[in-house]
Image (cartoon, rainbow, N blue to C red; front, side, top):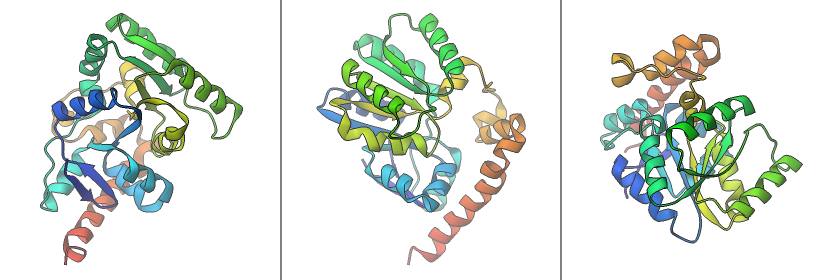
Length: 248
């Protein structure tokens, strides 16, 4: 795999089929592997958060989950093959987990959202081996985190899907890597709330052509104004700086 530098993050140049092959190969190997995603917001966070930047750099695979990163890589002259956001391919992933008898553990979101997610998952994929689930609102070094780690060690899931948002999910994955005997920790962002229908992910011309961020901004204008309106502009400026001032 070729890892392409997009501002503060390295992104592996893989297709969706290659990503899935890597995930299931990792699940058969000893030790813990970490797979994260990169988008424009993540690149901005990495520029100011050293722990997050280090965690992303140590990940075994970082895939592209943002049209901003696709555009940025293209402007830099190092185009990426594909953008692959988890909600678009997670059902394919679950079907393969069933076929290969892989178990999955879920960590993230408030308990109410997580329960709705698990209900829909049980309906759509009744044969999926669910090793366990835990909300994402715990503190590092807390008794709750220690209980979660104890359960993960006991269940030994093949995959741990996290939905705690950046940068917590990536920092936590690297933090617990050496505490677990096996498995693949896969960050999925807002997947649980989208899958559960708590937040509606509208499929439209806009979302299909790189403007999913705009649809989310319309739904949550106050919460996401800084992330998208300011953040996307900052990301583009940093791409131009990398292209014209750091390439020489």
